[in-house]
Length: 454
Image (tube, rainbow, N blue to C red; front, side, top):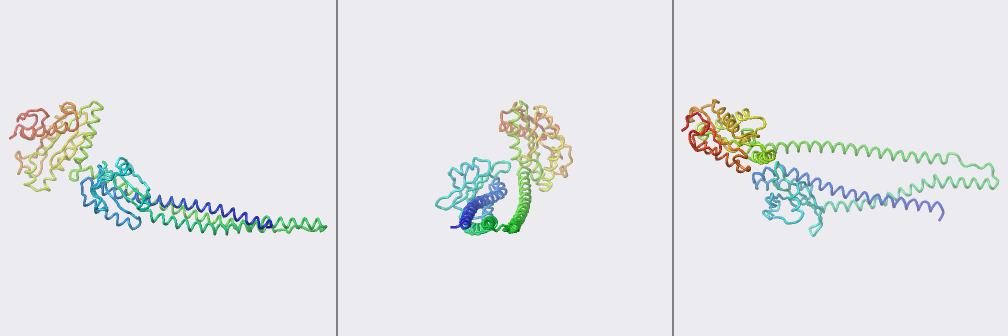
């Protein structure tokens, strides 16, 4: 075998090996990308699912959960091979599932157990008798942890696509490697071997006495120009491909940013609605309980008093029955406005339920809290509510107030709420339109009021 043939075989072999190695690496990167894309899309499904499910879980609307799961499974199943989607409550019990047979079960596998305790999404790729699958979990959080969304995505389609890509890449790599190797060997022969042959022939001719022999001019220059043109064309194609890819990445980034912004706004609005009373705009019962627990712990750490007022609108049912629900709603909204305008900005007022309100007074002693309660009582009594003279005993809308303070009357949040509620009961039994502190006797002369109690 001559030198030219040996060089061609060596170059083709080296190029083939390098190109095949690159092809294998590219297939592996593509496989990782496909699996990562399946996981990302699955997480997007669970993240979108967790928004409506948090409300349904909070209200224990199991039928709504089932409907939401069915809709998500039908819509997303067109693109993702979703095997099942399930919702677990905080105890790990299945409360909704695309497979009705799973309802009420408590999965005991280690992955689910870890997911129930984790505060972030998790995934696990498994391959068993059911085939390759991707298990996904997403905590359902809206203020509180309401449960966990789980899903399983089949990877059979992904694996089949990876195998097809691997086969095509292998064949394409071999063909391209052989073709490119042959071209490079040819170019190498023309640029190196051919000039060397011309130089050798010229040297032999001179040795034979032909002194006028010369190497042909322009031979190497022509091949260098051709080689430069080939590389320039390749560089232009690579530059064009890079520009197109950068544009695609930029477009996709903008789309994802817009989607994330919309999702963030929806989550923020959902959290606000979950903590706000729809009629009065005050914090609702759930938000009050969270604030009460937090402020009791804070007051204990700082050794500061914390007072609680439980306020009830007197004879509200009488007014509501006489004038209708719209008029009753107006009274509740106006009372809420009066409280908000009267209290400090650091105090917390919430609608506890029905016509009952709760007020947390930070760093406030019992005497000061009693004074604040009487100020609220007088502010309500002095406001001219429409038609109050037609239905209320005293011709006015009035409120009764119960006061309790931590640490003087209670040691924890539950005791504080119980003591303030008991004081409210004394105020109502003692004639209403008055402020009673925990421990006050049940007598008409209890602090507050107008002296006109019946």
